[in-house]
Each structure stands twice: as structure tokens, then as C-alpha cells.
Image 1 (tube, rainbow, N blue to C red):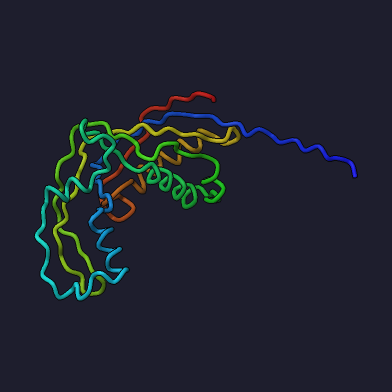
Image 2: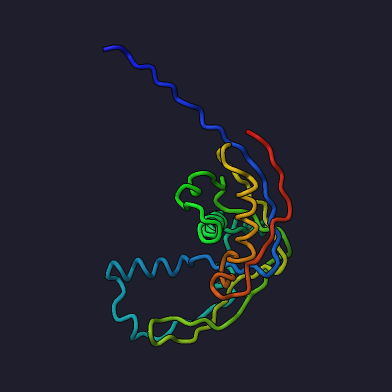
Length: 203
């Protein structure tokens, strides 16, 4: 049997840096560590009859801080998960442009877990939320809100993928879905943005 020669084709990538600019406030809502611990304890049977206990004393300032995605606490640099951007792009492409979402998802990536938010320091947003199933209970919610903001979004994409298409998916996502909490997609008014600048460079 003759040896078969297999040619492995190199996958070529390109990169671009897209700057998005907020057109409405950005609401941060990181899943709280304490909530995660309580969930684990409940699943492990460490919390019993939790519903019969009195409510814990709320600490608005602590809840405000815990809602932030911290990049550098000392320098007060905060960010958003890059997956929020990618999900918005893919969802927009599928819903409004007829793209096959699984294929698009594989064609590009955002090679940073957290993307830095540039702008003034966040302020505390206080509003009434509702928790529970059928019998929802009004509950004050304290979160960090960025009223003026912009973010650099690095994109790494396969060379056969059109950068123009990716930019338009991002731009459209910003005006139809938004990102983070209380966004347009969820009947909110926050998280709206546009693509402000494009810097393209090949790898």
C-alpha cells in the first residue's frame, strides 16, 4: 500500500479593531458570588427551610460593586464579557440577515474575555425588579450604570469571511438588540450602540 500524501491547508486569519460608542446607558449585572454560593449550598442540601427565614439585610453599595466586571480594581477599570458582543452579532445575523448562526459563530472570535469600558466612572442605578414565578415580588435592584461609554472590540476572523458583513452585524446588533442588562432586546432602553471606528490589519 502506497503512502498517501496529505496536504494540510493553512487557515489564514485577519484581525480588526472595532470601536463601539454607547447611545444609551450601559447596565452592568455580573452574577453575584454570594448568589452562586447560596445556589451551591441549596443544591448540596446545606440550606433547609430557607423560605421560612427572614430576609437578609441589603447592602446597596456592596451590590453595586458586585454588579461590576472588574479588570483592575485599584485603577477602577471595568469591562463587559466579550461573549455578550459575539452573541448579539450572531443573533442579529441569524434573525435579520438569514445567516446560519453555527457557521458564523465558527468564523470569528473576540480574543479577550473582558473588554474595557472607557468613560466616566459608573453610578449606582436603583430600580424595582421582580423575582419569583407566578407570584412575583417587587424587589429593589442595585446595579452599576455607565452613562457615557465606548469599547474597543478586537475581532479575529477567517480570511474568507467578509469584514464588512461582521461590522454591519455588530452595528445592527447595537441598534436592535443592545448589550447587557435592561437592553433593547428585553424591552429595555439601555445598551444601545453604534460602530464608531474601524481599524483593519492583516495577521
